Length: 222
Image (cartoon, one colour):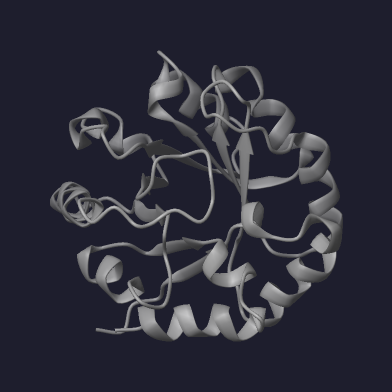
């Protein structure tokens, strides 16, 4: 099977003092997206970046910006992140009471891919009535909030179930996986149905960042 898998390095693990340089290195390695984790210190126990950094990134790279909102009440900030340059935008199912409304808010722009993220303990049944409204599902394979965590194996079964849900309805919805992804397990998640791999420390902690991106892609090419 030769499936096109998208590689999305996560800047959560990047050296922010050399962010522009490191973004250029992942692009050199053939990255497809740049994953941008936004944390608010409420939904997750960490604080990262806001729209101003997204806007700065947009000026420094041609890579699509895959903005992952790990924030409470994401509907309050959707517009600001899209206007800052997000090309893909996901929010957490657990962070809002109105997932369908938030998805429609994103889709009103017409050019931004809309996704929803589910935590390790969130059942896939949550997706049942909104799957048709999604461009992608982001499966968290670690508990959100920090980089460098180990992959949670039960995510593999979750990916497989979601893949069946999507295929049985004939939908064009991609599965993205975030957390503990590396060249050592990329093949396993792709075999279960993942199409977008987010990798942070496996890329940015490497001495050769472009080579690390290529290594994950090679491992994910079945």
